[in-house]
Image (cartoon, rainbow, N blue to C red; front, side):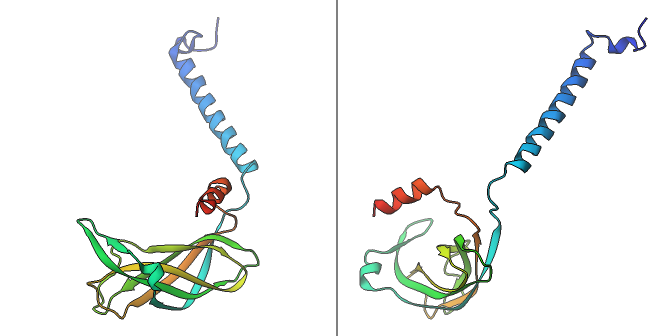
Amino acid sequence: MSNFPDSYTVSSPYLYMHLSLISVVFISLLINAIYLVFTPDAIALTQIKLFEVSYHECTPEIAKGLVNSNSRNILPANCFIVTGKAENTTNQTVYDADIFGRVYDANNDPVMQNRNRLGSIPEVSPGINDFNLRISVPTNQPTPLKLKKFKAVGFSSSVRPEKLYLNLESQH
C-alpha cells in the first residue's frame, strides 16, 4: 500500500501540475543564472555634465528649407546650433550620450513641448569635450532663447549596431 493519499496517484492531474510548476521554476532559475554568467560588457548609464551652453543661428546652408513639424501642419522654422562643453569624469569613453534639456522662448514658453531629448553626442572622451546640436524653433516664437537644465547620459559601450551605423554613415 502507498504512503501517498489517493489524490497524488501517478495518474493524478495534481501531480503533473506540481511537477510542471517545479519545472517552470527550475527553467526560470536556469535562464536567470545563464544571463548572470553571460552578460554583455557593462552598459551602465554614465552622467555627463554639460556647461557653458549657448546657441547661435545656423549658417544659411544648414538652415535652407528647414521646417518645424506641428501636429496640425508644417510651420517655417528658425535654425539654431546649441553649443557647449561636456565633462566626462570617468576614465572611459562614453558612447551615444543623449542630450536632455529645456528650451524656452523670450516669453518663457517651451519651444519643444513634450520633448526633453534634444539630440545626442556619438562619443565623449574622458575630460572636457565640445559638443553641438541643431534645433529648429518655430518662427512665431520670439528670441532670445533660454536654455535650461541641460545634461547628457551615455553608455560605457556603443548601443548602436555597428553595421547599421556604418551603413548610415556611408549613405551620406
